[in-house]
Length: 278
Image (cartoon, rainbow, N blue to C red; front, side):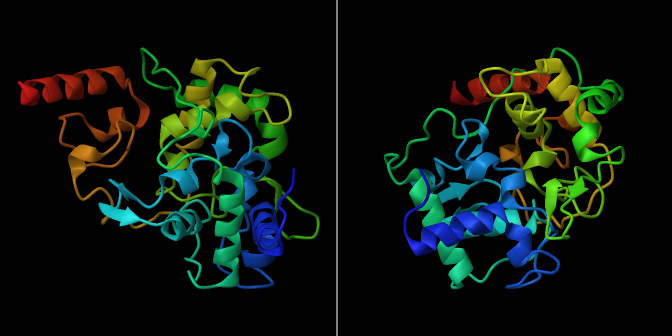
């Protein structure tokens, strides 16, 4: 089933071909890095565990610990433009923002308010007993990812220059270090359920959990654009276990927060919560 009304269809087109409209040579505005939303949200965010959009409308507005504020759907969309697309925010009153939101409603309007259906977002992988290993991940990348994403993570541009067939995974045209996929758990869960593309599905994965964690460590060890995240996580105790930038309130350092092992951090946090609740 495809979106019905004109605004929904335009929203779907913007998600699928973001760069054509809003990329470096965008026909509407040059505000993003050349990637498409669909490069990270499989089939327009409709595939289970494919960075699926089904819970967006049902769970927003909501308080997000990253900003410490109540965020609207439009704020969440602009987070992606500023982080995953390493660009600038859309005017919230623009036809483009209204169209994207209309499309998100088309995807998720049947989900009861406050609920997140199974398959929404990204798959949560069990933590490894060890730290994720970028060296092992490089071997996984060469064997399973390089054909599409390039030896240097540069991706495969479309012949007409209007975006990417396969997106860059690092370098100046990829997501910045403030993006959600810069957290290892998010990248690893996405890879496990969806990669290699056109081979893996959430119910028939190709890579092992360890391979997904390791290739995430390799990719997120490569150079990429920087984001000013100085205003993120005003309450540092709310930072996710795999948020890679300090300061932290749990006594663990940046290296372990980035690569793991994550279980000791979780156990220490759980123990601290129990002691406070007594």
